[in-house]
Image 1 (cartoon, rainbow, N blue to C red):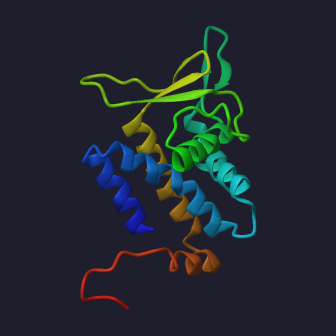
Image 2 (cartoon, one colour; image 1 turned 90 degrees about the horizontal axis):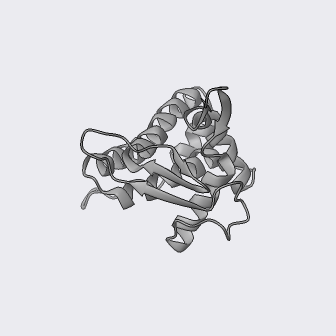
Length: 168
């Protein structure tokens, strides 16, 4: 898992936003499989998101402090499907879709932040914050799985890129 987290961290540091997004949106899938290999992809993805990300994407808004979810587990899974399979930001055709229609990822603006801005059914997310949030969720998940022998065995089977001359 360290290779995955290092690749995501490096993509963020190097402003490789597409690489960072592809890795970030794959993390819940990979972690979900390692933790619950017999569950269906969408169920394990959404469960991981609920546990490790939802608190970052639900907040109280307005004068009445009404609880609002900016990014639901279903909409994040729909985004994952749209981006990884079609290269799209629009999720209206995704069966998993909950409330949103489209995502706009924003590069970090100088001296500011544009994150969790919802305009109608379009959610604006600052790409570095979103990917860093996934990275934080991954770090917590790794701590949670540290004592799980079955999960650790599955982690050992994750794809590795081997240096030339050092192949198994």
